[in-house]
Length: 272
Image (cartoon, rainbow, N blue to C red; front, side, top):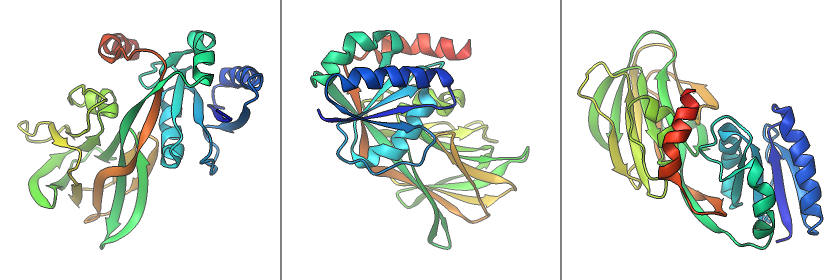
């Protein structure tokens, strides 16, 4: 290992002092440390051995959108409130730092999504995401839309919108709308309606190879939002296309995965 990308959330001042301290520890191993802030524009760093992210789930989501495409493995250290995506707590850093430097870890590969908005067949918006693509009304009025899977019209919907989620995102917005908790190590797409007018319109689980399209047909003030962070407004007849990204996020695992053991405690923490 030669180069480490160290990212912290500058909107949380406590992460700045921790990042400075960690940069000093990494430098003692003769590693080149590149400091970046989570809200700074990404830079091309394809030769970084890994990225250490200090912050909460939002910081990790933003980092994944920026750097997963470069193939940089990511280690999240929880300095936020919930920590669904973090692999270490801050109190565990000293215990696991040397194994990390020595490469004594494995990878968990996570599915990411490619979201495109098309107008008359032309792409007018594009973004990758780790958690979900959410199409939704931004007013009290319902929207009408068609759902297509692999080019076949599946159903017409009226309601507040639709979420297309990865297994990683199954514990986020999708869960709050009635979607299932899903093993993050499998590759599926979760389709979760948001407050559908017809009560029989239920969540669906699709093979990750499927291509999903949502056509906005009626209503006012609708938008598409990826990972709850990047949003663009929509016009009638625009189409949202969602498919697997051409790359996956590599998440570093330094200790055994306890997803199913930890999930209830973390959900309770989020509700508290």
